[in-house]
Image (cartoon, rainbow over all chains, first blue to last red; front, side, top):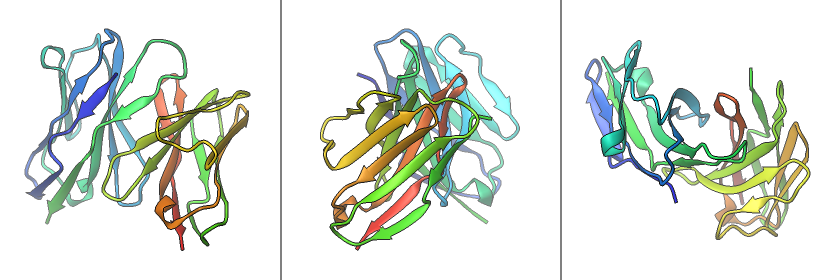
Length: 117
Length: 113
């Protein structure tokens, strides 16, 4: 069975500080996908990034960056120079890639980020 | 592309009545739709997986007679909460898998009074 753990339930920072969100996953599959989603107060889920298990290259996209460490089963996410609009709940999620369209997404518990002005 | 439209966004119903939530894939065919429930300050919990033309697969602990899922076409899946009670009040969200990952509906906030 697959499992995603986000140990941090809530993080509070002052604007312009960096925020790193931790994510640790468990899966028996060698092929899988990892995701980060943002959920603002309105409730919709905003896709941020997808990584497959064969791609450990870390990436920076604007103020966002990701650190995928297969050896420690971690997929951490950093917001650089945080802004008030970054306040939201962030979810890490895992999908096993075996099979076709029926693969479900397993979510971590989420980390609530509060950025204060 | 790959948009899922979910309606209604918000519904208040009386205890004992039924509520239907619709999810439509607008520009692609969704062979499989996932239905999640999210209680306040909690994560998304998968309720069931629906496949077009076949019976839905429910997660352990989810009452299939209470949460009726129909996926009659490649563009429409519905979740009906039957005989709703206040404890069914929650945020319900659907999701479809695409070639790029998963796309989500905007969610339905159900309040049972």
